Amino acid sequence: MEFSIKSSIPEKQRSACIVVGVFESRKLSPAGESIDQISGHALRDIIRRGDMDGKSGTTLLLHNLPNTPSERVLLVGLGKEREFKDKEYRDAVRVAIKTLGDTGSIEASIFLTELPVKHRDTAWKIEQTVLVAMESVYRFDRLKSQQEETRRPLRRIILNVPRSELAIGEQAAAHGQAIAAGMNLAKDLGNLPGNICTPTYLAQQAQELAKTHKLKLEVLEQKDMEALKMGSLLSVARGSRQPAKLIVLQYQGGGKKQKPLVLVGKGITFDSGGISLKPGAEMDEMKYDMCGAASVLGTFQAVAQLKLPINLVGIIPSCENLPDGNASKPGDVVTSMSGQTIEILNTDAEGRLILCDALTYAERFEPAAVVDIATLTGACVIALGGQASGLLSNHDALARELLQAGEYTGDRAWQLPLWDEYQEQLKSNFADMANIGGRQAGTITAACFLSRFAKKYDWAHLDIAGTAWKSGKEKGSTGRPVPLLVHFLVDKCKAG
Ligand code: BES
Ligand code: MN
Ligand code: ZN
Image (cartoon, rainbow, N blue to C red; front, top):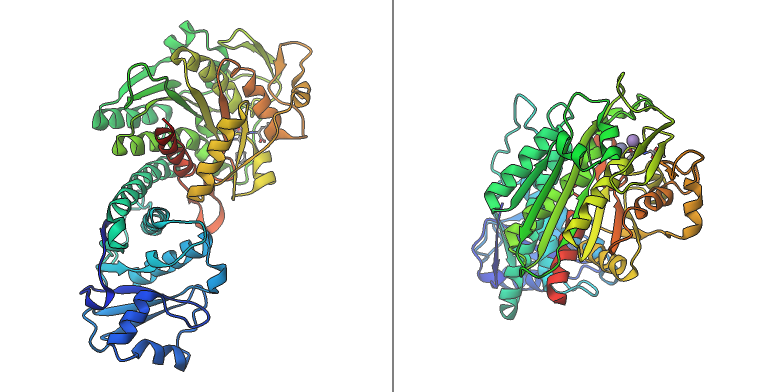
């Protein structure tokens, strides 16, 4: 899909399809008004006759309006004008793109970007339009023997902005496209099954990224991790025949002296639970347990594409969690790279076991801040569902920045407390800590566990167990939280 920013006059635009909005009050958007004028009030007549009442979710496709140079005009219902906010704007764009896909239009000129959305500017509307459009056309059918062909796919979208905002529009479209490319990469990796997307495959994908964008890449093998005494990470990999990898990517867009931001992504390419085996129902979805890792790679893709002036390190601990004669057992005690010992009371709480050693490894980069991203707890799905990622942090300003980035992009997070009182749930009779904290506050105790390995820097943890993929009929990876992460980094560039 191609996007171009223009400042065209709707009544003069020669396009396969022009998209304009209608509110429930039967009020036309400004571009709609212009077309109504030149067409001898064709639009007003149609609305008066009741063929389009402006209800959100509705559309009406019109052909060959009098005096109108474009072949088609697509009316999109916007709902009540007073209630036209973020979600309503996205819904309007989504239904427009879907309808365009069902017509024969190869190209379309969208004027929804002129609609006022409360508290949002042109840049926001352009970026969101690109994201929604790219989301709507995403397919994952490479594992089907026959790919479905769209007869005349929508190829080019023209987004209209006021003349004075052409440059702003261009930049916003570039942001949207970079984020979408990152999300597509994250989605593809998430959707690939565990027999294809192994730790080795993730390392190869990182290699591809590194080659394309001239990033520094290091892949630590089993023996390297042994030398570093990553006893916790390695204890998870014991049950698998696939070798574990620790992928370390570095992007240098900022000055040599600028401290890097570090992203750590959970890369369990399949989580069976190990000896604490999970029940069978929906276990296939545990191929998504590497979505944290995928979001880190997706974010690198976007950051490199945008050439952001920052330094970024990505650390991806990756392995499978499987039961085996050699697998860790409940009650086993392991020593992490930090020296702290851990009693593994449940082998299904493996994410924290690989992340803790990655967090210790992060210290060597003297990070400005570390953010880890992980499909860490089922409890987070119960608490927040698919709407918000869980956010926990030892630094309030960092948490605030992440929350804001999520709010802006619609890729939201919600903060949970990380009070010391919760740490008590991790007490072990035999080691420095247990790897589980009981039934209560599962998302918080998981973060408490991680916090013990993140004492030397500002740190935040995103639990994306509920947001990284969708279950059911629409099963598939969402590409979240790539938008949140990229915007967090974009904002960092502005801050200094
Ligand atoms: N990958 C899972 C978390 C998960 C479960 C994400 C279901 C999405 C849906 C993680 O490794 C896990 O198994 N966590 C356990 C922890 C428990 C044993 C303390 C969980 O949440 O049940
Ligand atoms: Mn698990
Ligand atoms: Zn897991």
